[in-house]
Length: 207
Image (tube, rainbow, N blue to C red; front, side):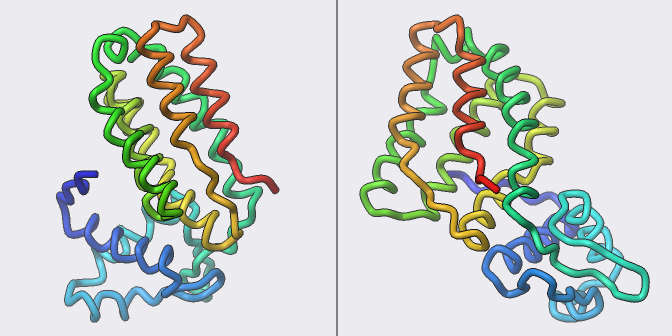
């Protein structure tokens, strides 16, 4: 998967903090010190503060008066909440993208192949990466920038990784399911939107 282009200092700081949370550098309930990050990255505190505000909107961190910023203690229920929203967005995307993907699924196919390889190697990290990339391409194919921006704002890759790391969620094989979606697009299945919605809901962690 081609890495996303990072356009600003704030986004670089945001990615640094997200990586720290996903990797376990900062654990649930642990304080994230704004000044310390600014010193470590040799930046001012302003872009660090902006990055932390974005992560608070994603519900990855929380702030309280006189207590500073801490990594949220996310539960399975917290992680599960985004899936109905995501499922609705992807249902709309699938319906908008149906004709385009019926003609050309080349943006989806490499991720299906990569998922088969990830399954073979039991590589959970690659499973997450290519599952999310598949769905990102599906949403992108809808050609609606508002839809794509809203979908990306759900922080899907981060929450998927955290559900595995923090909750021990078993990442089952999704390769065959994703191949079935590709085939449904190719045959112009009239129920493609519902198929995608059900698929997404089936991926949710259970409280």
